[in-house]
Length: 458
Ligand code: HEM
Image (cartoon, rainbow, N blue to C red; front, side, top):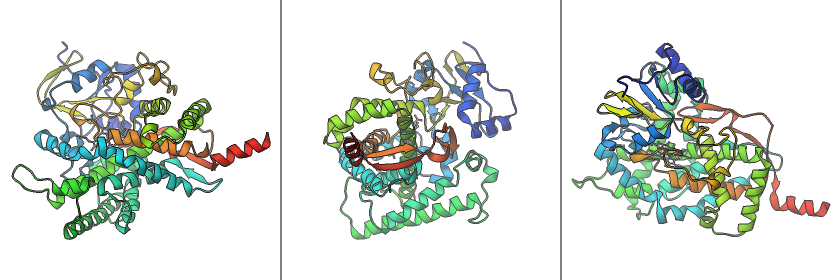
């Protein structure tokens, strides 16, 4: 056992932070080449930050007693966006209780009831596109995923209040849409509210407006003694703690904001990447369409079980982790990780990106090959786009269902092409990694017309 932290870059701490903000994927790749499968960043404002790029280390973390780590503390960076009462920030019993409360709408029967709505929302958005129109995939996918998450949370997606929330959330996230503008989240001294013309002021102002709408919704439900449904807000409003106390309005609003934020941008980004890769690889598009055409009028849940569609989504999630590392686990005691001895208060973080791009696990890892997921099953330590252990993504099942149904609804009905052949690189967008430029597409036409026209020509 080595009694010290793994090696890592020895450049100044502020420079390590800048590189992490600017391009976390290339920086990690460079470190693996220089220091191996486990290395330590020492970034300004952070404790030593050990990044793990090997499944053995991932297993050591995911299979440990979760009480050996604090995680909520490591997520402090999101506090200005979601407030103090967010699942992201909790640990221990409070975290366990809140997860139990929020979990049911994301599983089983409840999840199934959203399938039809997802297809309808996707088809409705696509039906508005005009022939020859240029669309930005990430933006239109965000419209769809926002509508879905609003429906999951509130049980309905229509009405003035919901229509107002949509642009406000989008505007709030757009403030950090480049690596430079993302610095506001990482560098506290930039978090200055100089009115709505300053980026931080704009984020705060939008958040305030959203919270006002959420408060109105909570009050409206109380006054109408709205019949409780299977939506999240209904469940949260009826929940009581061990002393019989309901959640306060502040708690309700922070959790709603957490889910609104976590629940739409991530999935929209993955869908944008999916369109990019599918349209760049005509054989993949053809195979996908063959499978979808064969399935004809299958019910949405049957479509979600199609093997090639599933493999395509899994490969997108492997190739482009929307969050490059999982939430850092802060050790509460000293422990051994991959033969290294680490002290309490060390930040340990498995890197989704590094493990998903290992050559010994994924043959030709830099190639987009959905077939690999038909040929082999990967363990939860080799493939973990949604993290693992007691913090595994709460919305994983919803996100996967949504990706499959949105792709199926659009790919089977419409012809789209990439607006240009330029290689699109991942870049930081706030806390996520997103396609630079958002993947511009050209909407060609409805697919049935296309097929008929071809038949006429021949
Ligand atoms: C493709 C889309 C998505 C991806 C790739 C993704 C990925 C992740 C990852 C990597 C984590 C951290 C897990 C860990 O540290 O072990 C996480 C946490 C979380 N995700 Fe997602 N996510 C997605 C969609 C969603 C959706 C649709 C929701 C629904 C509201 C959601 C809600 C959450 C929540 C609440 C947590 C915190 C869980 C906790 O702290 O216990 N995510 N997600």
